[in-house]
Image (cartoon, rainbow, N blue to C red; front, side, top):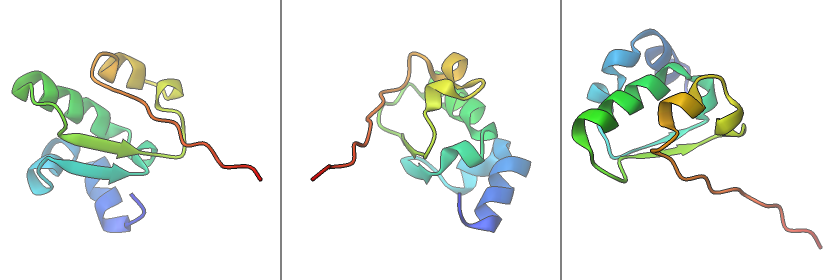
Length: 85
């Protein structure tokens, strides 16, 4: 969501964002476009397909408002650990 045009589209037109960017899709910095979480949930409820959304961000999703309710049973978290020397 670093691209300002994509970010504006995700926030202002979240209902059509995945029509313009159809799954399977990778969304980086998803925390910058929280409106997409509800759209992802709606898609998953309707389509019932696994592996359609790959979300990356610099915040813990489960700590973000609304995410735990929206995607509680639909998500798998992988934490990145920095290697220490």
